[in-house]
Length: 192
Image (tube, rainbow, N blue to C red):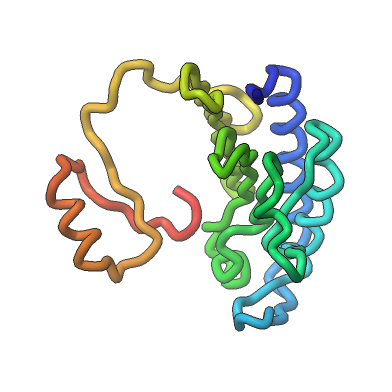
């Protein structure tokens, strides 16, 4: 049903750039922090980027937007066949402490499957996007740095680096790592 056109992908890259600029406009070392009901931090940047995405994404594909910073009180998204899912600033703690390891995440969900994903790293001006048609017959992967597309290898990966979000790996995860021939692991925070 959905495979985004090259025009829509261009619009999404533009929106991601606007979201990055919005986030960076709050990235000045004096970040005001409040806490959500689950005790996780939220900043004015989280809210501003969320609002920007909630307004811009339906102009590209007119479907609902579910944002980490603006969740409905009841899980009505469970009834949505297709929707945008966003985390306006993934890595809010890294944003707060100034490490630069935060990103903007945008996904297009169709029938409970992510068919498009975009990760934008504002501090390094990098962007990755990928999409797959819902039947899995075709896919597309792209990387951009400073607005220019960077060629990606087209052959199969011979060496894998596993990126983790924490140093404390579960026993199950360690067993899984031992069963694949990984080149190594990296712990970058929210963005690699």
